[in-house]
Image 1 (cartoon, rainbow, N blue to C red):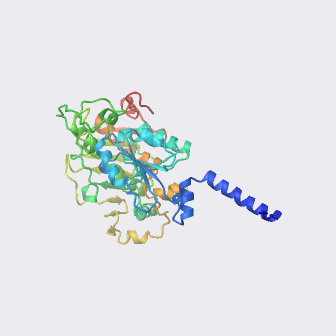
Image 2 (cartoon, rainbow, N blue to C red; image 1 turned 30 degrees about the vertical axis):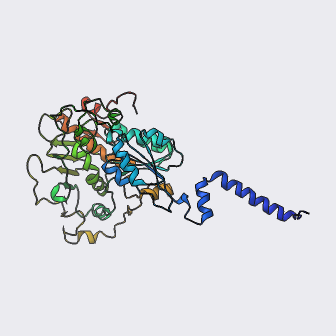
Length: 432
């Protein structure tokens, strides 16, 4: 049978089609091509994730894979076999389980890593993930001690990664920032965060125990890997899982647990989310325990311009003055964070036209667009600045002395012992 002869134009046209096909199949993963052929939404529109840490918080980060849809959760990881099993069950088909987070980072088909472990692991895992080319959504608090945040920010910049922190976020606080920016309340401002103004600190709930008697490690838990960079301490169930928050080796009590939630949007509203205070003072029982986080009464942050942020636990020391306003300045006060009660009346309505960017862009949107600005949740740098306040507050509580802070150099002024607490040692072989 004679072959049909191709004209030069037809030949060149088919050659171009073939070249395009080779290019498509060479640079686009097979899973994307399959989606294009089937007419379904291409998998390239799906941000694939791995969740490291499948305890209480971690389960909320797992997006179940649904039949007939592109899997989104491709891996879960935990050093507790029971937690891992519950994570796999929720994720469903298309998800693999891992014991070692480093094996997760080797996978090329995973776009983002959700770090949902205790805070003493946050920095190491986030840094390794970004070095592996992954974007990171880290649980709060972003770090356990200050220097970790500096390294995380530098890593995100060096590798061009998106780094955000999962807190309640900043959306809805634009109108409070408008009030501050307008100057109608005058300066300096005083802001109070306490149960009466909506901020619960969980101080007693996340206080550590000082009467722990060593127990046998459960077979399901790799306790040595759970400790990781933390010092080796005898196992007790109160040290791990949710109640780890009560021990300095892993977290920073109720202040570290809730601080990102309550303080970050307020620092944003005050326009102080990329700087720091000059003075941090605290009240609490003395002496504090060297291992277990405990009670505190108040923490006061003061900036060079006289602005003050007062945290009141209402769980130790004098009770909160319920008549004290949430925010006040020399020209008036705002009684509610998101309400309309104010003095002068109509404060929020009067400042509605003040231009402030809306903070409503999601982590996934930032990942897809590579634009990490005006996001609902704080970026890595913003979260680092916020958690620095928390670390300084805990340093003041643990040393019983005010902390004088240089927010530009990010160092403690005039107290070598406090300054040393900014960079704590890690158990070998783990290091920053």
